[in-house]
Image: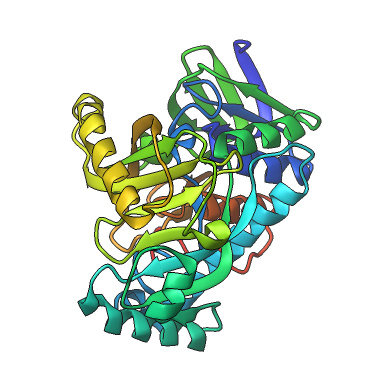
Length: 378
């Protein structure tokens, strides 16, 4: 990176969140410079299992009790909007980014969860959200395992987030855009005329700054807004057939922490879960072999007819807020020219796709349907 640069919007973070923001901003005709302390896409983006669902970690019923019906329904509808935005973006790219539409199966891990899931289905339907009930016989037609009840919808998707990020940056490169990896943002200095992003290589002067650095954005915030957790994942060698896994649906369960799984465009299986509290990267990574064995055993019990062999196992760290929702926009205690795209929770990619729209509208001083849904002062 040259010693001193200027643009209209500086974006800190070049993972999938940063890529979505940059694509939206440059499509609107704005000049954008993105920086990342790593190579683009080499942080949490490469660790993401990328199950794209509108369902949140907190059910709509639970979220209604916490936030009230109007805001809870708005949050669910906004997340569905984000999933559809990813689908639209992926469909407009010339590259194959591993995008596929998939139905979603959310099953009751225990009999005592069945009543709550039935209530949840009714709550979603009244909100106009896609949701159906599967009874045990219907579940067995979809998957090999048994469950007392499951929720089903056709709104889910899967994608390769690393390939999607690079495809979006590739499209940005044909616009007024520059991207610098291995460039660490050390601070943001508000001045009367511009915002100055200090880095280990030079300065970036911009009218606005968007922080899309995941849980590492904490150093730019006036206060801590999320707790950190670790999740673990495996990907198998390619499998020959998906017997007992109809439509290769996205799978997750009601237990907490929950198991989640999907297939890939090259016929592998990705499964994740076994979450625990984050301590440090070293302690987290030491747990990977044991966690991987546990995930493989669970998947073999669910799908006994599919031969599975682990090709790779890893761990990732994610931020989680009190209400499982992201933060999008300016922090009320900070400079209003600093905007945040923080897709905390299990729906990071749909949240980030929505954030790209909301923040672009904010920079252009336009309104957006969901501009206050995930505000810091909610």
